[in-house]
Length: 144
Image (cartoon, rainbow, N blue to C red; front, side):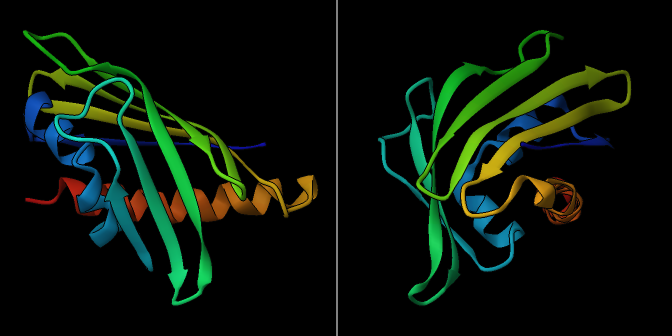
C-alpha cells in the first residue's frame, strides 16, 4: 500500500481551509485530468458519496469515495474528514485534518492507497507521484 502525507500551513481560518478542501467539485480543477461528481444531496456529511474520474475520454478510471467521518472544525477545535476509497482500480482511505493555528490553519492530507493493477514494488513510485500531484492540488485548493 502506498502511503503519503502532505502538510500545508495557510493564513486561512480553519473554517475557510476546511470549506476549500472539502468542496469536492473544486478538486477537479486542482487534480489534472480529473472530474468530480457528487452522488448524494448536499450538504456533505457521513455517508456522502462522490466519484473522481481520472483520464481522457474512455481511457480512465473511477475512484468512488464515501465520507465515513465528518467532523468540521468549530470553536478552535480541529476538523477531520475520513474517506474510504471503494473502486475497482483504487482502494484505501484518505483523511483531511484541518487544525486552527494562531496565524491561520494547518492542513494535513494523508492517503493510504492500493492500485489493484500495480505490483506492490510500485508503491514507492506511487507514493512519490501521489505526494507531488496531491501536494500541488492542495496548494491550488488553498490559494487565495
